[in-house]
Image (cartoon, rainbow, N blue to C red; front, top):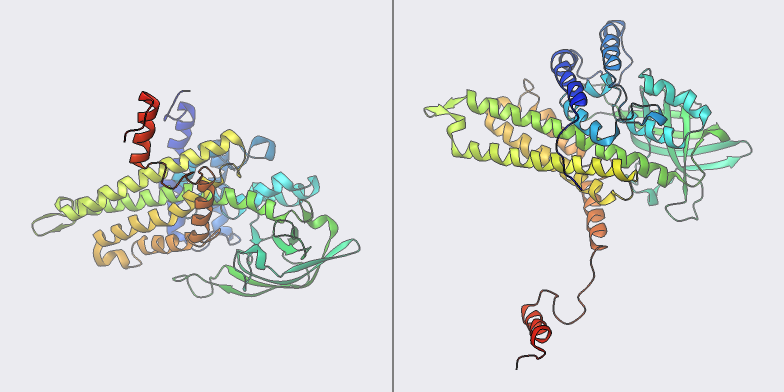
Length: 428
């Protein structure tokens, strides 16, 4: 078995193009419309955005998160990781390349579990970038714990009727359709008690009670909806996947989403490191540049090491997904990079803020927005602590308790065993 850390030369050409394209073309959208990423485009925005998307399509880099059989480019998770490092530096980058969250995860489960009719109605326009979508799963009283969900869907003839509430349903206010998880068999275990439903956002009985904004967002720009579902009636063919299989469907979506968040975070953390290095070489104090100060050198070294370790782990996890085509098999490492994602970004950004001084905490630099992103990533797709438990449980499956009184590494016991194996006797 050979090891290779190189990138296919033809794909590297595409990556180089993407890097230049994001830095020169897409970056301008980040400056002009930082809060409009998921909103319906104005005529002015469309005149700029549509030509950029067309350039991405011409380069063969549109919707790289799906295989060709599912309507994507078929590049796989490893190549997507390399592209996402570039896109992670830009707010608009993922949308211009057709890989924005939560639409990537929603497209993935539609591709895997949707009927031909569902794919034509929902997946096709989603892949074209004509619409955005919403994954409506978490609940006010339960957070992301599916065992505590109470939103119900009851079969009524050829329809399902849903009642309940969902919270932090991101982008619902702009979405064309929702993917809603609801309890259909409350007596079953957590893995079989819920089903997934597709429904247009204008379905009667759906009410966005309020849109919650993240700290620092402009007033009225909240995008994380509290939704009330009251006697929402959808046809039987609104079911996504099999009845009672929502947990499995969700794991397919969330596994991919967690990996994609990590991929993009590699790029964002690298951006913070780049800013820190530039500042260290530019700012003078006490007779020399900051780069000459031992404390700043420590910040730079620690940040470089963290980013590179994180990047290698993300790429390895992506490689495993490509090789095994099984998110469950890679569950431990997906959870591990999910734990690392907010920590690495937080640590690097915090050091970058320190090196920039007071300027670092103003709205004239993106560092505080990056810091908030780190905190959001510690909660999105499941809190860090849940994934730490997953890593520990998966890890322990590869171990067994010691058979005797002493640990297996106990030196006196091992020495006696070695004596007996080599000389046939145990020393007195």
